[in-house]
Image 1 (cartoon, rainbow, N blue to C red):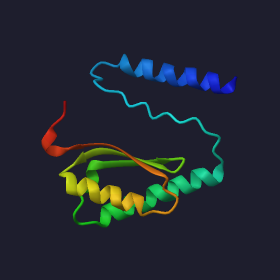
Image 2: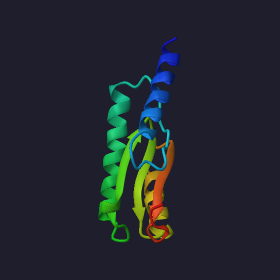
Image 3: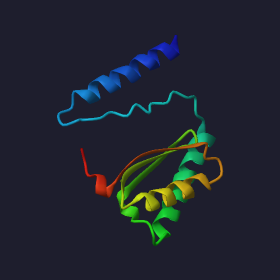
Image 4: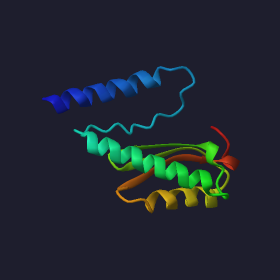
Length: 114
């Protein structure tokens, strides 16, 4: 019963997002999980490690990326200078312990915004 309630809340969040003026695309990455303190700490640790790696990698324009981790899934959002840069960021993410999956919502700079 509780799961159904959360599914309805997720659907409502997506519906409300579509109502915002200017929204052209909605990514539904909502996760329902019973996370504990250890899971939240691990996710924060993963995010901090990746942000550090990306920041100190001279071949990555780090300011163009937002990075979040939820339940071991790393979410990348931003604009990559090129595919090689994006692949470096993904590679750094995959090399971190406890990363289960990497989801990229990164656009390439030369593709432009749609």
